[in-house]
Image (tube, helix red, strand yellow):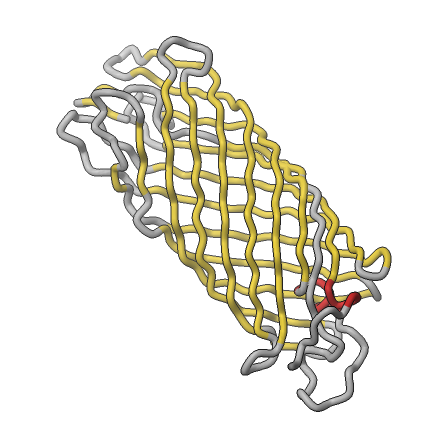
Length: 307
């Protein structure tokens, strides 16, 4: 944050760490394959239906890297915050026939928390005085996807989708000091993307996921008197996501999986408040590493892909 040309070091800067997650899930899929005709005899279960009809719980290790890449302090950045966070993820996926084949729905929630390192500057110089310390970062993100799968033979599937989600990040700055205070960021977003899946071996499904979108009316709230940054609007900016996962069926409906994903959030600058404070442009990168267990509905067959 900048005050009449002077920077108050605690601004949104965080790099949230690598998360390691363990996922357990239950899926609902069909006795018949999702790309067969409704009246066709039930074929052998598809490996993609096994993965795309599931509920899962995972351990996550996450690495957060937040930076305000300005140079008001005479250096290369205003401040940054980085560190490793631990948490978990819960996800549910469903692919079945509605009015069309292979309608895909996915919902997930991820939560992480840890202490991370903070580096910033008290401006007003030169000389510019560096501020070092720790903060507590707590992040939650949920997202929903709706799309349609297209089978490219028995070994490939592509599933374009539209997505809505929200990331909420709370920082306790000046942790362990009398001057500690809380900043929180809300970043709703909308996006479009696609899954790319292949099954090179029996029981093994590889999934790639790519998404691009934009934040929608993001805001920051600084619980510190005199800043004026109370639910202040931040400029909408790009959101990018990419991920990879390998899933292996170990027994009946039980699968294990591991993966990694990357998210980039940009935040535009807020308006200058009457107090003189404002929130500058910032960039947040999150690297997640996951490992978990998935339970597949298709092996259980509690519901059919076709009514």
